[in-house]
Length: 232
Image (cartoon, rainbow, N blue to C red; front, side):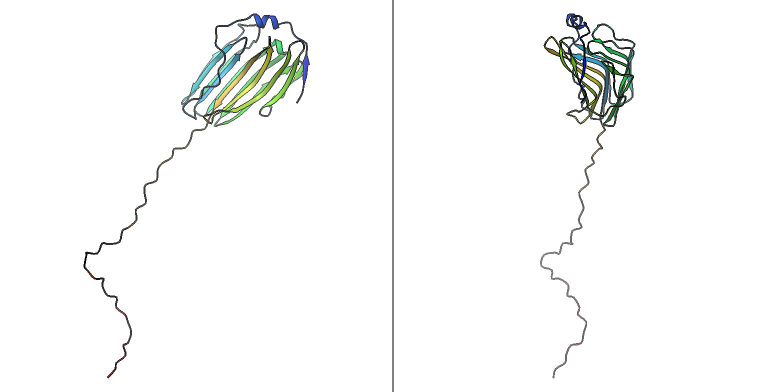
């Protein structure tokens, strides 16, 4: 694991002073249909909560949403956020991502999930001036030390199996220490599953029953071929 150290950017006080009416980000919804898909572009939980936005889910045809820009706070900025979901698939793409407090920047990040398999892709992504892998393996962890604040955890291509069997893929998962608490930021998340095959009950096997002999009727004799000895 790589340890990346950088100076505090001075935006910590700004981040701490921000409040939003949105509730803390929830985990991806566990739909009753294991083949359904869902996605969101950005979410945060902690001292500065950000509700998942934009967010979509579908167990059938493709449903998509786009948010042109998310810059309501100085804690995190993002350009266009595009998400779409359908049965057995989901995709999330976020452009122009910046998290000043963590020194994190990316031209784009995306997460893709199809039939229970997922991947993440990052374009021109850096943290504290260090280039990040464009196609990181699942659950690539990069500890980051923030001077005067503490340790931050950065996970790329975070993959988690949900209780209903679906897979959740998050391109960027960042946990930041903020005033003794943890601010959890999730960028580009896609969740999908694979539809379970229908199980059809087999009809019971039919066994031929022997014919029923009426009561008192003797069985037919079986002829025996051969010569019988004659005595006299």
